[in-house]
Image (cartoon, rainbow, N blue to C red; front, side):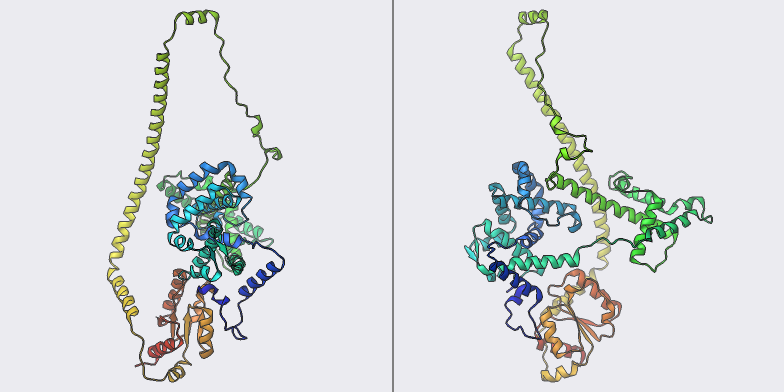
Length: 552
């Protein structure tokens, strides 16, 4: 049974261990939906998690072919397909990069086409599911009707986010494969909506606006710096900033871009004075008590400018792709500022030229062989074909030249990295052997009764990082002085919570590498002894902690 929804089936609810709120809300929403006679649940949560996990690494490599074939078949149907999609945030700011954002947007339009009944889109989705999610497809196609237990069983061995993705994929693909759901499956739709909304509240970055007067205050500071008579005339006009700008141009040239590319891509650049004011204002919004020098602000302004460029390019990319995919419905007649009017485009047929009578007479007296005309046409076609082929070869040569330059640079970097890591080889081997030995350790044996071990370690200052909240609650009942940290709930790591601990234990199942890295860094910084728990069995935990802290 999947861990992330095992609360639905846990029969141990009581005053000390109440039903989780999100579970209760999902069940109540489902009951309300049924009472109101709504046969179809809201699918937006399933669609969201379907889009998060459907594109695999292999599909990512092939996606240019997929989107090309899709647009070849359906480009004229996009406005109709979009009627069957929802307002899910797929812009670049909500994804890893602009490429992933575009792929998800196109995938969602394909889904909309499938929902509209388009045969090509339905078959395309089923084909993608079959070849890129082979194991899940083979398992799923054996069902004619599937229950909630069976859906959750398909996602048992995955991380929580991937579990949600698998559930979303199953809920989306089953109708396309002719598989029906048991009645209780509708609860899953509400649960995915709840998880999606929770994620938005926790992860979405809402732009903060400065307090009234802060911009003006920062501008006065910048003006004072720039007008300070003690500064030389060179420093007065941002010598440090322009030095950084030259380096940025050199970097762009290294990547075969014009040096001024980051600056010409800015949408709202209003001069160095305003840019420095915006930079200082951003710093004051986040660090109001910290003071900055003129030199620092010049350096940080260049970083601010480059960040602005990235945001502007991403926003422009999102806007243009949304227009191309017909996400925005606009009418040329409603735009008074637009000079373009497609209704005024006229395609003229070239009129037959009237030749003078004399030429007609000459022409009639000198018949042209039809064979000569055919040969001439063939020559023209061949010339056009060869020109096209040369152009294609030129493009291929340029692409290969760019790829070679990039590969050469990457190879040089890789060689340097290999040289660097060779020096750490012995340490890495030692760490690997330690991990292997840890996995092979037999269960700790001790003849002392468990209750005596428990009494001996009850007053110890222990911290346990990772694991499920239910497990934490059970341990907390027996060891109220211990500290417990839910890794998935910790967006930032406050190392002070670990100070004074005699030992820190990690339970790393389902803990991300990023979170683990932050906690292990905090532990090492404070030189706190640490270890790893390989089992959630309470008796095993007691024996291991006793052996570590009280054993001889």
